View 1 (cartoon, rainbow, N blue to C red):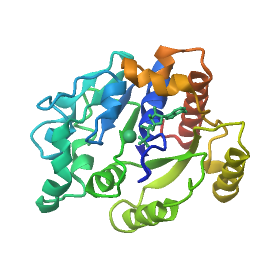
View 2 (view 1 turned 120 degrees about the horizontal axis):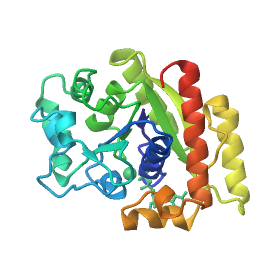
View 3 (view 1 turned 135 degrees about the vertical axis):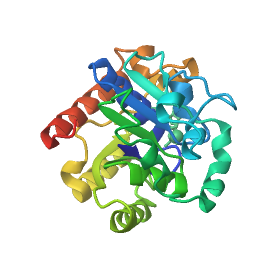
Length: 259
Ligand code: ADP
Ligand code: MG
């Protein structure tokens, strides 16, 4: 499942690590691929990602397998992460001249390559752009999860994202679908949050998870401690909502036979 939205700060990384951790708590094996050179998902999952650490960069250029670059997160023994280091910052340009430049991640995530990990779910955390890294993620995945922040301008740029997904579907990956929309950073005190929520639900219907992630200080504090919110404050509203959202995703997956 690729977590994409070319807007920054909408909750892609936060949703990736917390949904992954929630599924892992339920005993599922989850692999997170950090595809953002900033390495925020690696930080939140507390995996080493200093420059030179085996990372998704080596995987993309074909020097290393996913199994070789994956680390087990301290968050859960069921949770693996292929980290992103700053070396990934140049990859967007380096990839341009490579063969099969759009499908390098897909090749790296073949069933044979994943045989030693055998994850139930793979989450790919995208950078805030629609460049080759995000295209690689969309070619490798079957489903797109779009986090949408319950704020003004939330829907801005969504049309562009959806058109890009259509292009990938038409030319590179016909099995890709927008399976899940997750509303994040909901602030119940504002009218605006409700307006955005009903507008998104009106537009995307059942694709939108019933669970909405509230704006919560605990959620934003957790990565500073190298933790998911589920470990940092398990009883918090933020932790509960990510558990609920993960349950919806798992139920949907089993309904679709893809879990
Ligand atoms: P993206 O990956 O889309 O750039 P992030 O997941 O990094 O977005 O979130 C952007 C910022 O908002 C981060 O500082 C994060 O801690 C904070 N944040 C994300 N979700 C919440 C939330 N539910 N409540 C409060 N802060 C949040
Ligand atoms: Mg991010």
